[in-house]
Image (cartoon, rainbow, N blue to C red; front, side, top):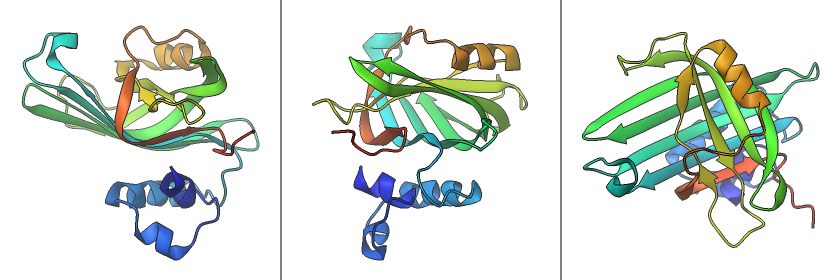
Length: 194
């Protein structure tokens, strides 16, 4: 997780940045586009992958979700962010990217403020069943204080009203969440309270 905190401006050396994966470099680029110089105002960030076996959804292959995102709260209280997500199943992979426009932070797994519900506009996709200009959302769970991996849900899709309702609701995941097999999620500043 140090690599994720590092690229978000939590004070690491150059050698630590160079040692991180390419996707973490992309996360750093997203943070730079948003003008993040520190984790002040950070709602959530992630560079993570989930893999779900075929038996869960009745597919013939694993279902793989990948998320790269940063969501911040500006001084006026508005959420801004960027994301790239993909979903692979049955031999096809679909990509989604755009701007995050809403986020809510909620409790999960007995922890306080470790679950982020994020959503935003789809500015680009190769999924012909999803319209550019529609919305995408998912839940990202930071379990760093527990002896278990971070977790994520797969994305949902719909219109702006559904997106806002999703972020504004404390409802827990209906499907999943699924353990992160690669990468990390940070909800809040990423600093330990202990």
